[in-house]
Image (cartoon, rainbow, N blue to C red):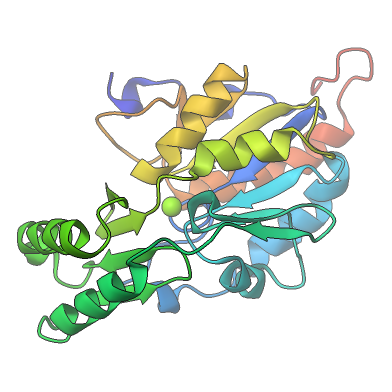
Length: 262
Ligand SMILES: [Mg+2]
């Protein structure tokens, strides 16, 4: 089923017992030509100010970016956050956990950097546990890049996983994903016992959607795609932000006996 044939998430009524998990780029922040161009989103931060107490603090970020970058984007908030697709995670108490860096990642990143130096417009993002190759500025290179990345991963870091997203090729270990990150958050306060809701826009969000579906929650995919596990959709970043902006008023007027918005 195509995503746009699915019902809009606007038909869902927010409930005080929900736990909200958000992907960032392409979900609450507009995509730019390079990841560095994405700047703070003050409107989302203002919405979070109001929304956090309505949901008992149960809001987490689940992104491909490292946690330190996410803190910059969402300052002064320091939310429970899973970075690098769940390979690093910080709980509500500020405790951070990350596994060891994957073998061969240094060689892989060096090889990708050297290749990108010969391909104008290609950006290699080096992270502590993963890498990403962005080609938004030169989409025609997609085929050549896919071959290049596949060969380099095979040579330097064969245990790592390649995921093709919107104008980006992500390379990450298989040890964690956005689904396992949401599962780990849901085992802890303030998320435990709530209904998980996850909004994301890209291939790496599908693990999160699958987990949320299995947990009886709501999986929401942003934008158009042919294949998704999400059961609801939203059109674009603007629609996501406007919807979240409507939550605090709705939740403050939730009927106490049902927990639902009036
Ligand atoms: Mg995204």
